Image (tube, rainbow, N blue to C red; front, side, top):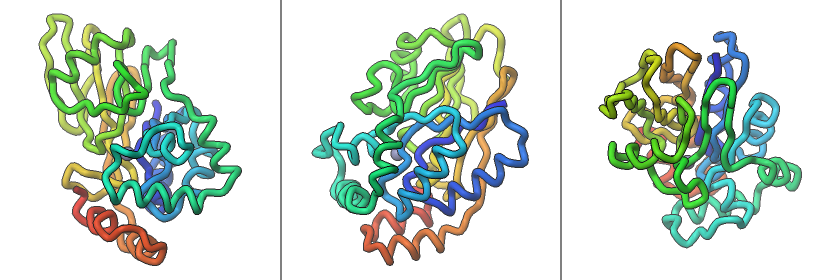
Length: 240
Ligand code: ZN
C-alpha cells in the first residue's frame, strides 16, 4: 500500500498530522505530488520533512514559481504575495531540494502515472475539473491509474472498458478492466468545503481518501505572525 499526498503548501501542522496518521498504516512508500511551498508559514520544515519521508517527490506550480521556472503573472495577487514571501524565507539547501523535484513519474510495475496538474500538459498547470477534462486526459497516459493534485478538491474517476465514466466519493474498489484518474486532495489547503487535511491510500485493489484533523488555529497564528495575506489565513478555517 502507498500513501499519496499533495499540495502541502508549507502547512507544517497539517503535514505533521498526516505523517502521524500514515505511520499507523504500514505503507511501503509515501508519494508526494507537488506544491511543497506557497501560501503557508513553514516552507523550510515542510521541504525537509517531505525529503525525509517520501520516495517520490514531484514539483507543483508553486514550487516552480519559487525557483523562477514558471511565470507568476497568472497567479492571483495573494498567491503572488505568498510566493514572494516564500522566496525571501526559503533556505538555499531547501531550494536545492525543490530543484530536484520531477515533473512526472511512472511506477511501471504498479502501472501508476504521477503528475501534479494534468498528464496531457504537465508544465502548463491546467486544472482537471470536469468529466470532459478527464476524458481528454485519459488519452494522455497509458497506465491503469493516474494520480494528481493541483485543484485541492479530491475525486476518483473510473473509466470502464466500455468508455463509461463514474465518479466515486471517498473510496473505490479498483476493477480489473477499468482505468482511473484520482485527485488526492490537499494536505495543507483543502478547498472542497472540508477543512481537514486530505490524502489517499492506494493498493492494487482499492483507493481510499482519508481526512485528518490538525491544529488550524496554530497554522493561522503563524501565518499572521509572518504577515501572510489575510484571505489565505481565513480560507483554512472554511476549507474553501
Ligand atoms: Zn496547490
